[in-house]
Length: 162
Image (cartoon, rainbow, N blue to C red; front, side, top):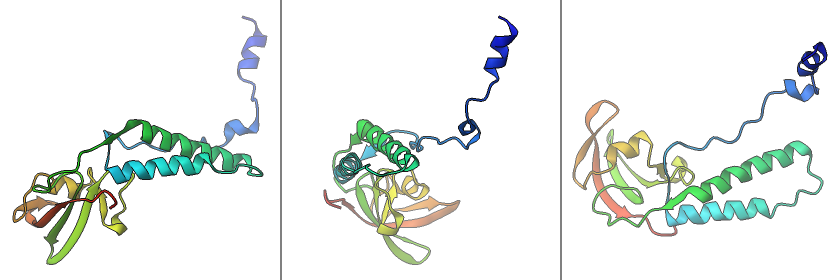
């Protein structure tokens, strides 16, 4: 190889090379467990993005939408719909009423993409869910380094729609 090959290798193609790289949206580690509702929501998200009119959109907006679509297609392809649990123990797909720190709360344990703590849905991998999974009503479980920090009051299977 001559000197010409070396100089071409170090030549800058464009100013784009020095821009911050655009990474793919991060996929949560582990299995992609979903409820029937979660699968429906993922399908709706894919369909919505696929139906988007890209006419007149700038290149960055199109790239962002395509990146988002790749995320949701990957989530759809890897989704593992879980059977509706019996509701006798805390598990994926249950709604749990519990008491912690003197107040009573209710959460549904769902998949990553379906989780929304403000709507009372937490991911099955969250510390709170992991602490409660496997417990029965009336049982107290440890949480955040405190023994018997959470009292399980009630458990029910999450309905298909919510």
